[in-house]
Image (tube, rainbow, N blue to C red; front, top):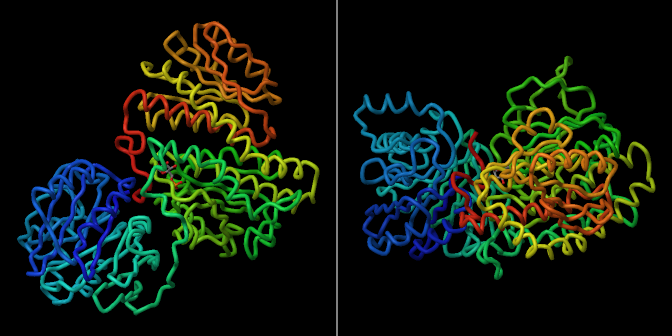
Length: 617
Ligand code: G6P
């Protein structure tokens, strides 16, 4: 949410900044801006409403250059998307800052600064940071010290990059609650919200820790921790393929990422499966000891990741006999959830930086039992980004291997989370009940899954045809029962996110308690209907819908025995291991949303008002 890129190098950095912004655009895209310090120590700032392309067009008319620069792509929090609210924000003619996060005490600070004579030209919380650092710089004459003195006055979350024309050989960054990495190369040093932003210039990174302040100068990188001590942070090599730049021939990143799922699931599972059981040792040192004591699981996540948790609840209870509670992080973190002894706290996150999920983890870690001991047995994160805050701060971590996900609507991150969750569930089952034929059947199913997912993707053209029936609709209902109910929820979320069609999901058995009143010829009903023990009950629910004129779009396998007919469209999927059907049935729903969005002409990869990584509360 908001993307920062900054550079200090031996060459002009504008190209690096613009390319970095393009790569960070998934984090926010309502406005973008850049500020550079040229060789005369003059600060030039260019900002534009809209995407990075609009900023590039503005830069063509108003050239800027320099070997030190900061840049930003914004997702509005304080103040509407406008040129005056776009970052960088300045104080006077010398200081410029870009910020990701929210400064919670910006009101009193603004008042105080106004009383001292500072004038404000934007509605943002960030502008107070610009004035505070400028004020401290006037006192100290040194940028790092000025930033440190400012941070002690701020409440809230931030990643910052700051530069000052009177100290043109220094770029200062800071992080607390929002991600920031430091890129290292022979030609220069860089800051970015995500390593992806900097892959054209480096693959070597420091991941800053909470409270770190970093100074970048031509002489090198100096990191101070939150106590002001100089510290060294490990250098990480970014090993992923650089898939962020290209769509590999696909029209959108989302379509590319949908089609990458067979490989992403296979990659995620590759080290986790033995011959006929899951490999508990592959879950990391200490995993067996921790998981062996688990009596209950609390799963906390946001958005699509939350839906993966909902599926896992069915698996945990059915396969491992372990009670499970699933909650969105924004609710969990403000509740005094009762924690029974032996409870594992499990988070799910593609990015590992989602503000509410991280805050929930920290809240859970701080909970204590009556004896002053940790209330939770331990914490486990399932995450797609190695080195992310969630990974670093959890006791155990299972990494999904989806690779970078650029489309704002999550696809391959979800299915890989489900694959990893099934491994964790089977590990808990194995520890509690010993190896079993059921585990062997599901492990065989997991091994076969990539191929079955590939087969399902062949339905893309047929689903595109089906999508024509949704384009003019305003509402859609998604139905499922059992572990397909969360998949219906995920299908509805995808349709809302990228096509802007209002969609709701219901457990089909709940229809009669209200939503049936909505059914008429204008309401398409999507049913997730693989053959399972609840299929006859689902069929009865669908009859009730059809009897009231609702048009049915049913995703089913041949064994579910649905017949195509008037007002009933059936899309036939391959048969898979019944426990893994939630993973398979996700794909056609993703494709349905995708094709509807394309037909509607919406911005598929960057839907309005959304951002991929929500690093503010
Ligand atoms: C945003 C994204 C969603 C994602 C959610 C949680 O809302 O647009 O696609 O599911 O954040 O993100 P996480 O990185 O924690 O999975």
